[in-house]
Image (cartoon, rainbow, N blue to C red; front, top):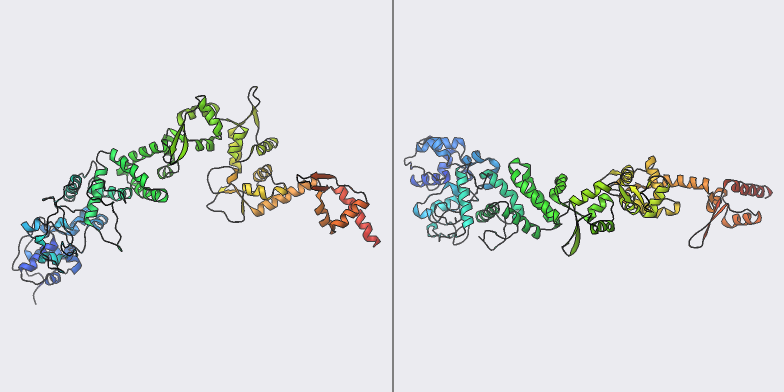
Length: 577
C-alpha cells in the first residue's frame, strides 16, 4: 500500500497568484487523475474544503510533501490565510463559496484559478480592468471549480475561453475596486482616508442602511441598490456587492459634502419607523471609537436639521444622546410652551417687541414656528421665574378657574408686581407642585386606572376637584402613575380603589359641613321617599340647607340635630304601632 506522502511524479510550480484549489486541480490533471478525489483522499480534504480553498494545516503539510514545497510557500494561496489576516467574521462575509468567477482575458493568457477570485466583493480584474464573470455566459448556471478547471460548462459545454469581455467605463467602480484589491494585498493600505480594508468594510456594512433602495450614485447601473441579500430568494452577488461598495467609496470622498447629500436623500426617501430603524442600525458604528470623525459630522448634520425644523427633538441621534440638544440654535414653539409655560400669544407678543426671534417655516404643508435660542435664554434669565395665571394653567394642565382654586387653598401664591393689576406666579413654585404631584413612571396602565381629567369628570358629582386631588396626593392617599417622564397633571393616572377611599372622606367631610343627603337619611332609617316626606311635612321639619341645581332640581341636606328629630319621630311612630 502506497504512503499518503509519496511525492507526485509531475510537480508543476504554483503561480504567485493561484489558489490552492486551482493548483490541486492542475496537479490532478498533470498527473493523469480523472478528478481530484484521489488527491483529496491523500490530503485528508473533503470535497467542500478542496472546492472552497480551505486547506487545514495537516493538508498543507501533506501537499508540501507531495510537491516538494515548503508549507510557507503555499500558505498565502490558502483561504485560511485571509481568515488569519482579517479575522473570521470578515472572512465569512466576504469569501465566495461553492462557485467560481474569472477574468475572461486572464484565462486566455494563462488558464488557472486566481486566489483573488475567491473574494466576493472583488468583481473586477485588477490587471485588465474588466468585470469578472461568475456564471456561465451561455446558460447562466453556476460555475463549479471542477467545471472551471475542465474549461467548459458542465450543463451546456460552453468553453469559458470564448467568453465575451465586459469592460467597465465607470471611473468610481474601477477606482474603488482597485483600492479594495490593494487592501486585500496590504492590510494597512488606506481604502479611503484613515480607513484600512477592515474599517472600510465595517463602515460599508453600516452605511448600507443609508443606501438600501437608493439610486446608484456612481451610475454603474440604472437599478436601485440592493446591498443585502436573502438566502431564500437569492444569493450573494459579487457585482451587486461591488457596486454597493463603490457607492460607499463615492459617499465618503469629498467628506462630508457627499455624506450630507446621502443623508438628504435618505431623509426624503424614508419615513417614520423605516427611517428610525435604518438610522438606528447605522448609528451602531459610533460604538467604535475609530469612527469619531464620522460621528462628529453626523451630529453636526442633524443639529442643522433640527435648527431648520426638519426633525424633532425625539429624533434618533437626540434620543440616543439628549445632551446634543444643547447645541441647537432654535427651539420649536411648542417645546418653549411646554417647558416654560409661556403661552403662544405671549411668545409672539415678545417677538413683536424684539424680545424674542420667531421664524415661521412651512414643512410638509404645515407651519412650524422656531424660536431663537439665544434671545430666548436672555429673556428667561430676566423673567425666568414669573408667569401668568393662564401660563400656570398650561404648565399644570388645568384651566384658570382651577388655578384660582389652588390659590385660594394656598397651594400656590400670587405675586403682585408694582401697580400691575395682573397677578404673576413663581414658575418654580408651580413646577414644584407638579413634581410633588407627579406619579411614578410605568410602561403601561391597567383598566382600573383613571386618567386625571377622566377622574374629575366621572366623580364631579361626588365633589372631586383639582384641589382635592392635590390634597390627597400630597397627603399620600393617592399614588399617581404616569407613562412619560415629563408632562402635567393631565398625564397622571390614579387607581380606582384609592379614588374611592378619597371619595369616602369627601363624603364624610361634606356630611360634617353641610349635612346628609335626603337619600342618605332614607338609607339610615330604612324608609321610603314618600314616607320620609310625609314625616317631614307632618312634623314641619325643614332641611338645614337646600341647593338649587342648574337644571332646576333641588338637593336637600340634613345635619345631625335635624336627623335626631326625625329619629325621635320615627321611634315614637314605631312604639304606637
